[in-house]
Length: 425
Image 1 (tube, one colour):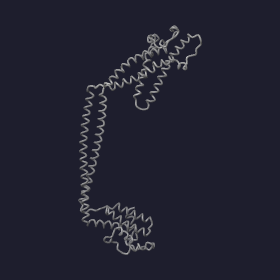
Image 2 (cartoon, one colour; image 1 turned 45 degrees about the vertical axis):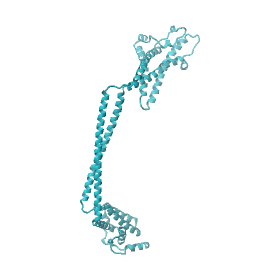
Image 3 (tube, helix red, strand yellow; image 1 turned 180 degrees about the vertical axis):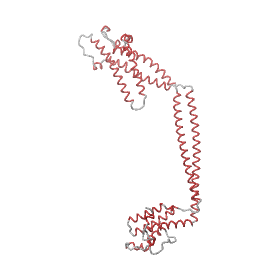
Image 4 (cartoon, helix red, strand yellow; image 1 turned 60 degrees about the horizontal axis):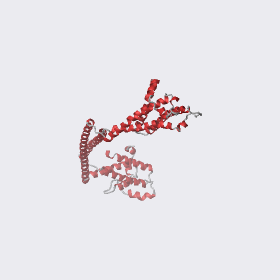
């Protein structure tokens, strides 16, 4: 609600209303103390709280008289400050000090900007130097890692025969398990040995005679198990929890595959040897295979071997990666360049923020300079303080009269509106 709307319909005479007829007996003494004089002018040296109490009594605390009194107090305080030479000098000095502080702050921030720009130049120089060193590393002579070189040589020596062994072993095992027909005529001394079943020097030639598909199957059989070892190594080098699921799954699949090959060969050996027995023998089963040492020998010759091949291959790969020390140095230098670039970007942003702050100080200094150009200045804080004291006295009288809470609240709202618009009065 606007201030003048609150005063609409008020009477000028009510500004000086006498004691109201309805007041409780307990407040009689208080009322006499504030209404014993008929003037509404503030007495010399009278505190504003006491003045507010007294004029509230003169107007019986009527709401429509509050604003004129507040305006009167406001203008009175302004006149007091206008005639107070010491206050005017103090306010002038306060503006000078505030301006000096802002100018010092602006100077400090300008120095920080200069320091930031110098730091940016240093970081740019550092980045250029690092880039030059990086280019030298990329095109310079390789620096060999001695330990990696030894590991590479040893693992290479191991991988070549291992790979040849895999080719011979799995081509023979594949042919024996899937295509070779075991003949009783092959039995030597009444027993068909494991070596006769596994190692067949004519496996490739025999597969060629059987057909092109058989030959390709035999030739690619070793590749399958070499691939198992390769994939095992690749997954072992991965990050994340998923590798702990994939690796056991791969090993399980490889073991099952090897077990089927071993079971097939051992079953053929068992059947051929059973033909030499006079008595009936049970059929070859998983239970019998688990107790058959030939079954486990074939698995060890294959499954365990390509696990070892996979580990040796992993050593070979790692040694090859670490053979040249330059890439590791390049990686460290690239990381340092990126870190320096981040510092540079942070410094640039900080410099922009400082420049924005300096720009914001300029208008503040101009505002102070405009205030310094005015002949008369006012201590707004002191004016509001005395107005608060005056209204505190007014509220005290309202309490004496036991005014309803709604009237007290209306008076408070009116006062708050006055304080809020005080600089526009």
